[in-house]
Length: 122
Image (cartoon, rainbow, N blue to C red; front, side):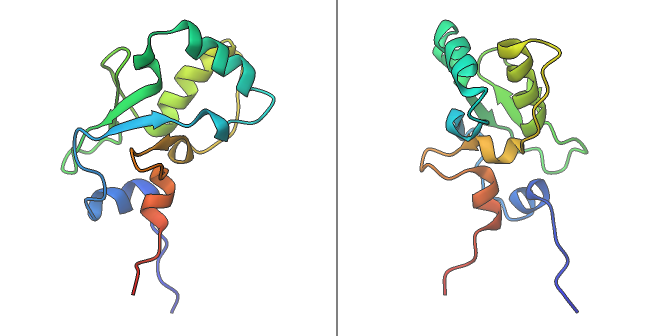
């Protein structure tokens, strides 16, 4: 029987792969190329805190708002914060399809998606 697939959120939480308070950086180069210039321009006009979020470890709370945006202090899901940034940078009617887990990277340069789905080393 094949192993059950789990989502990134569940894997990160279940295995404690990100320490509460860890600083994550928005990886702009993962955005679709057509949107990168506008997002980079918007970020350049914003305080540096706009490109950072902190991981909030609330494993036992039934919500998925585990990123606290350094810019406004509010909590978001990974995808929700990306959507919020896209709307602020490109306008409220702009939609892009991309996983928020791919856009937030650790200080070691690993995306949250990669961290959750890396194969254990033998």
